[in-house]
Amino acid sequence: MSELFYLYSCFLWAHRSDPRLNPDSNRVLSVLRRLIRLWPLIFLFHAGSASAAAISVTADRDPIPVSESFTLIFSAEKTPDDDPDFAPLEKDFHVLGQSQSSQISLINGRFSKRTEWQVTVMAKRTGTLTVPPIAFGTDRSQPLTLQVAGSPPPLAGGNGEDFFLEVEAEPKNPYVQAQVIYTVRVLSRVHFSAANLSEPSAEDALIQRLGDDRRYTTHRSGLQYTAIERKYAIFPQKSGTLLLEPLTLEARSAAGGRSLFNQFFNHSTHILRAHSDSVRLDVRPIPAAFSGKHWLPAEHLEIDDSWSQNAPQTTVGEPITRTITVRADGTTVGLLPELEPQASRRSPADIKRYPDQPLLNEEKLTTGLASVRQEKIALIPARSGTYRIPPIEIPWWNTKTERMEAARVPERTLTVLPGAQSPESTPPALPTTRSGSSAAPARPESSLPSEALPAGPASGLWFWLALLFGLGWIGTAAAWWLSGRPRKTPVPQSYDDGRSERSAANALRIACRKNDPAAARQALLDWARQRWPSARVMGLEDLERRCKGELGREIERLNRTLYRHPEPGWQGQALWAAFRSDPMISSKAGKPSVAADLEPLYKL
Image 1 (cartoon, helix red, strand yellow):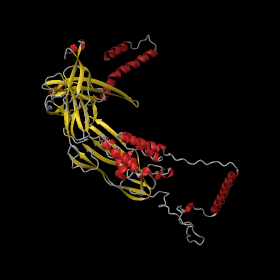
Image 2 (cartoon, rainbow, N blue to C red):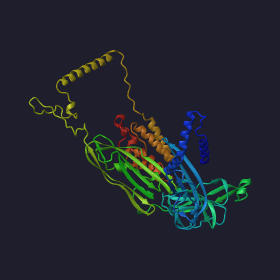
Image 3 (cartoon, rainbow, N blue to C red):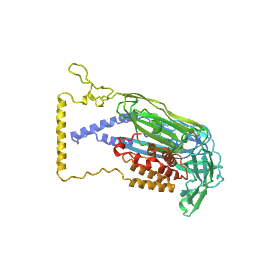
Image 4 (tube, rainbow, N blue to C red):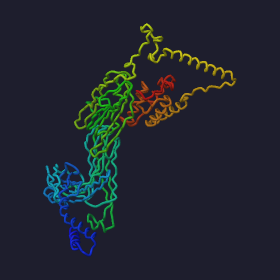
C-alpha cells in the first residue's frame, strides 16, 4: 500500500504546474501535493492513537488432572498487533493443537468483533502451574494460574484396548432419594462414527441426564485415549441394594485401524462394541437423627423472602406481596415442601392471604441438579397496626456433612397504616341539634357511617323519590297480575344437579378399584369442582384443606404418593372407604350454595 502511494505521489509531483494546463487544474494539483506532504504526519497520528489490545486467557476447567488434556482460550475484543507466539507454553505444557475463530456483532448501531484462539495442552507435571504472558506482537496476554492434580486411579477396562467404556457412581452408599452422580466415559484410540450408547436403567430409581458431553484427552495404562464423558443424576426411591445395569456402546470404525490414510481411503468398516460393568449401590434409609416432617436430602439448601415494598409496610385494604424462594442443590423440585401452609399456620387473623400458583424449576448442571421453588402470597390487612409474621423453617439433611440442618426465614414485622377512607382514621361525626348538643343516632344498630344517612332537605327529597318508585313498582306488579297472562318464573337451577357429581364419584370408585393414583386424583378434582362450582380447587392441596377427618388424611397420602414421597403399589380401598363414609359425601349439607361459596379471590 505504501509503495503504491509513493508511486502515485511521484506521478503527481512529475505533473506539477504545467503551463499547458488551465489554472483550475494547476490549483487541484497544488492541493493534492500539500495533502501528500501531510501524509507522514497523519500516519504517525493514527499509529499513536491506536490503543493496545486487551487479551484475556481462561481454561475450560480447573483443577485439571495431569493425565488429561484441556483447552486454553485467549480472547481479544480488538485486533492484536500480530499473530500469537505460543512457544512459551512448552515450558510446562505439551501443546497438542490450536485453532482460531472470530465473532462479529452489531448491537444498537455499535460494531464489535471478538477473536478467540483455542490451544489444547496437557500439563507436564502436577502442582501450581502458571500460563505465561503470550506475545501478540507488541500486545501481551495476562498470566493465568492453574492447579494440576495427580492422575486418577486406573479403572477397569484400561488394559490396552482401543475402545472401551468406564462407569463410576458417587457416593456408593447414598441415602434414599438423595442424589448420586453417575459418570460414563467412552475411551477410544481409533476413529469411530455412528455411535449408539444405551441409557442407564435401574428399578426404583429416578434418572436424569446432566449437561452436555465433554471431550478431552486422558491416559490409561500408559496409553493416550480420547475420552467423551457424560453424566447422569440418579435418585434411589427405596432403601436397600440398587443395581445399575451395564451399558452397551456400538459404533462403526474403518477396518484399517488408527491410520488417517485408511480412514479416508479404506471404505470397509467394522462394528465396535463395548460393555460397561454393572454398578451396585447400598441405599441407606432415612436416618434416625432426622426429625423433620418431610424427608429432604440435599447438598445445599437456602430460603429467603422478599416484599413488593422494601420495608414491609402497607395501608388498610391495600395488598402487599411476599415472595418466598427455596433453592436447593442435589435434590429434585418435587421434594421441596410447600411453603404457604407453614406460613399461614400462625398468621394474624386480621390479614387475608391469597397465594398464587408456585413456580417450579429444575436446572441440569454438570455438577448435579439445582431446584428452585418460589411462592407468592398477596396479604390484605383489614385493620391498622403492627403485625408479627411468623418465621418459616425447613428441616433438611445435609448429604455432605451427614447431619440435620434447618433453613430459616426469621420473623418479620408488617406495619399497616390507616387508610384514607377507613373507619379507624375518620370517625363518623354525630349530627348536632339546634341547641348544639349531640343527638343520639336514630338507628344505633346500623353499621353505615353517619355521612351516609340523609339529613336536612335532602331527607325529604329521598323520601318522596322512594315513595314514587315504590308506587310505580306496585302498579307494574298489579298490571302484570291483571293482564290474564301470567308468566311462569323459571326456577333457578344450581350448577350441578347431582348427576355429574355422581359420575365423578363413580370414576373415583373405578380408579380406587384399579389402584390408579393419577386417575383417582383427576376424579377427586372433578368431583370437587362439581361440589363447589365457584371455588378454585386447583389441586389436591386445596381439596385437602376442605375435607377433614379420614378423607383429608387419605387425600394427603394420595398427594404424597404422587409427588412428594412416591410409593410403589398404592392401594385405593382406604381412599374409597373414607370417601363413602364421610358425612359431607352422604348428604347435601356439605355443599354450599353458589352465593355462599363465591369469593373474589381464593382465600385460605
